[in-house]
Length: 484
Image (cartoon, rainbow, N blue to C red; front, side, top):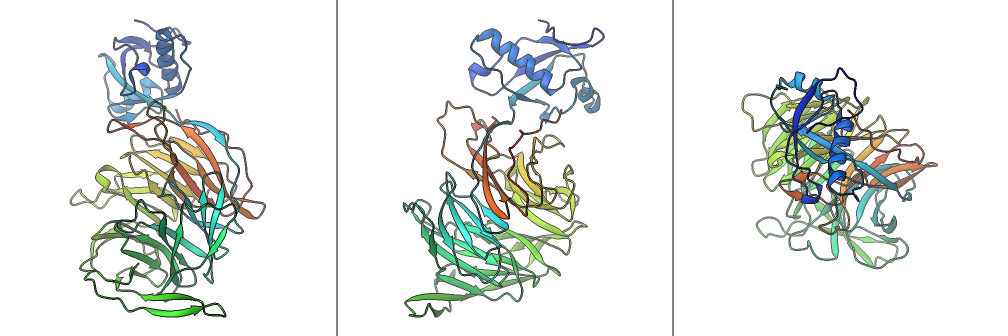
């Protein structure tokens, strides 16, 4: 079979076979066809849509991405084959998957100052931190249900603490970190029906850092949190009144309010990790015994919780702002900092501390990076250049660029909303939630898109994105950029 598209007479033709792991109605015939060698991704997408339309008169055209030998095609086909040393004399197998497609923008959720932190790890709500000294809980539709008040300076980091055995309960715990040198623990009823924000106070204050706290992360069990500070240390804290051996941790009580009707407990660090020589800018706690951190001292470190010693020390050459662990087998380390390069290391490879990927499409410092929880290939980054980028490790170019902001983006995260039925075509849904400033106020602006990426034969559905920026105005998202 031969495809006759809009190409020049001199174009070479190559024999290809399109394959896919999508549902049968979205699969083209397995026979090979001849197509022009100068087709780019958009041209290949046209071919696939024509084949699907030939078998289904009701087919609606949609964009696709293409993989050859596991790598996304981001240049004309012939150029890709030459660059990769792939022969055009044999039948070429090309896999197609859904591409990013923007849908709609929703109304912003306003803050009173810069949005510094966001956590979207619970599908029922979004937790944000703000420079107005407060944190907020947001429900779908942009409804702020709770305002967490009590810090004496800007909130710099937030995390949801999923305590053991409480995953399905409505009374949840969250932790916030602040420039006031404290962490605070809060509890609230996530399913409480509220039409207006309710102000709540922390039930526990954690004191011990000697300088501003930059980051907080929770252990997977929810029993502890760790924090990184400008005092160059990482502190470990209990979230309840018992330590790992079941002994009661030293707790002080203090009165809150003029009448003293409320009591807040005060906790002290149970352990301190020492080794960094400058600000510990980001920490993550992906496994019970392992903590990761990055610092302005240019290092990425992996800490053994039991011994308090670092078992890995990678020198990046740049002051680092953000960190996340994920990817293949949740073993890859992504970090960004004081240059436009997002670096990714694989510590499983012996004898080398060089990054295995260096993604460099940003034009300013990188402030946030987050792996997709279900996909080995996808992560998102945010930057002072005002852009958020979705990355797929199978190509060196971003899958999508969200550039509606006019100023610095401070934070980003994924958020999973309501699950669609299995027959809905959705892979990674992005971006859903951005935090941006609107007339000197920060808003949580929502967009919704659909793509389909098959990961380990399972559809990822309705995964959403959140981010924060310093300043700018609300703009209509003009669509994800395709890089061909």
